[in-house]
View 1 (cartoon, rainbow, N blue to C red):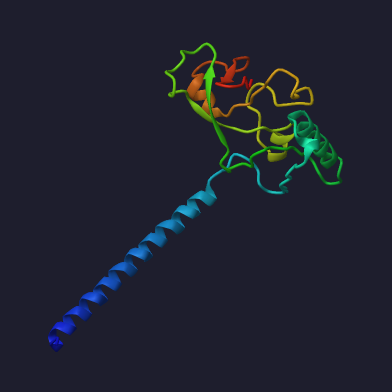
View 2: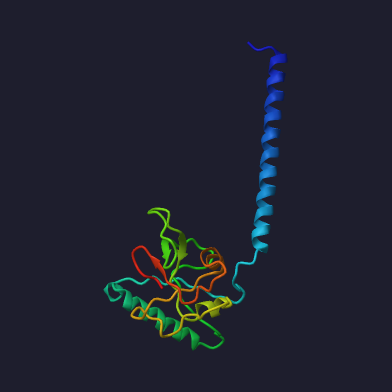
Length: 185
């Protein structure tokens, strides 16, 4: 049987442990709230005000090939642009700030890195009108247009980070970026 003094000591230790855990949880939640506030204040690189997004899943044999998928989304964006109050419309396979496909790529004219050490970039397919709809300004080069189809020569739009990293002090317009499996631009 325990003596009252030993029970009192055990009780005090348990209370101190509970208080320590509560303080840790409170500090952790405060840090989390501060991080969320910083993220909310960050410029996402696009204008989210007034945007409406939708998710369209194409199924069935009518969309078994990429040209049919591309034609569907082209027609969808054109129909959306014709709606009253719509100033711009575009399509993409990955919404901004969402994780997307990361693919290894090579920049033609630069030294080829060892196999497995190729640079990686997030890759997404977008239509003409996509950047206008998001309010993303073009810094240099051109945006996609109706002439950029699945049958035309590939075109890519890169962000400032990729341009600075792989084309420092040089003009990336007209350069070729290629994936290891498919030429993407």
